[in-house]
Amino acid sequence: MHLTMPRAPQPARALHQMPARRAIDHAAARQTLGHLHDAYQWAVYAHTLADRTNHPAERLDAAAMLAPLAALTGHADQAVTTYRHLVDLATAELGHSHERTLYARAGMAEAHHRVGRCEKAIRDLADVYTTATQRHGPEAPVSLKALTQLACLYRDCGWRDLAHRCISVATTTAARYLPRGDPHRTRIADIDATPASENHRAVCTQARPSWPALSGVSTARST
Ligand SMILES: [Zn+2]
Image 1 (cartoon, protein in one colour):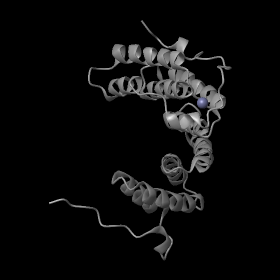
Image 2: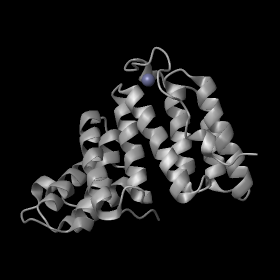
Image 3: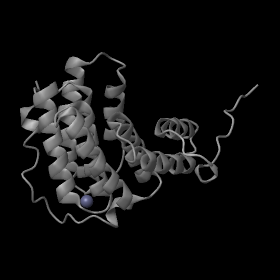
Image 4: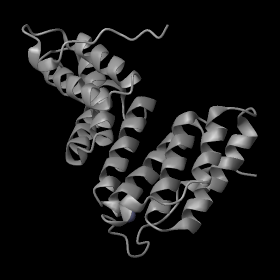
């Protein structure tokens, strides 16, 4: 028998203010079930509640829940704003080179890219990659994630050669440090096989590369 989670009350019907943590949990549960718009509504509610508290962990978790959901549900400008808030919170609480801060900065770069701020997005993400490799090593998940995200941004802006160079470095690094079957190796192969996003062409503002591309890539250990 297929069991489903009892439907949680909608945020607008919650008569009494609930702890932000419960709202975060509701958002996570809805997201796990694939109900992204419900999850987004809960995340907005959680973010509002958390901002009224003095609990840094709740504020951080609420922003971390809302930012990607805003992006996934088409609230592109809100995604940029929330990622910026998340980066500020994570930097203040954890430091600028902590993995959660770097993931947040990478998410913010993607959010900028989604609204056509391509040059800024690529420059910021290249900086995240450089910081991640220096602080955590090129084989760390956060470094490989930033590098493959960078490949995606280059690819979607139409720069397949630069995208391929990022993927080559990621593939070499993963093959050297990660076991066969590691999900990061699979993800890199999947990205290499994925064509450029048609949706990005409508907002892309890159006519030619105008940034000091891939300065971070050269710092990676490659064979
Ligand atoms: Zn672009």
